[in-house]
Length: 120
Image 1 (cartoon, rainbow, N blue to C red):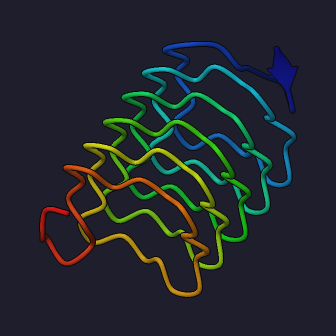
Image 2: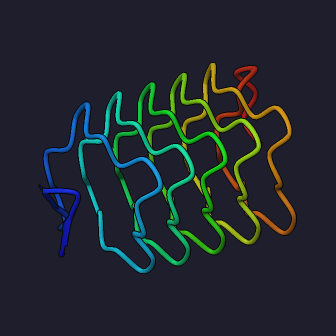
């Protein structure tokens, strides 16, 4: 899948990628490097981000409904007003992440490291 000139696939190297408002519905980004990526308002509904590195990614107002973020690294990610309804965040690392106003209805956090450092 090609989005905004970026090749979207498992283990893609997308550091600093500009994916603002991108439609990534159902995308397989397993193990992708999305550090410092700009995903403002991106649609990641049903996306697979297993083990993806989203350190310091900007996910403000992103739609991550039913996304699979198992073991994803979201250290210092900005998830302000992101929709994480039914997202799988099992074993994810959210240390230092900003989740102000995020929608977390029915999200799964088993074994996740929360923004304050606690293990859920």
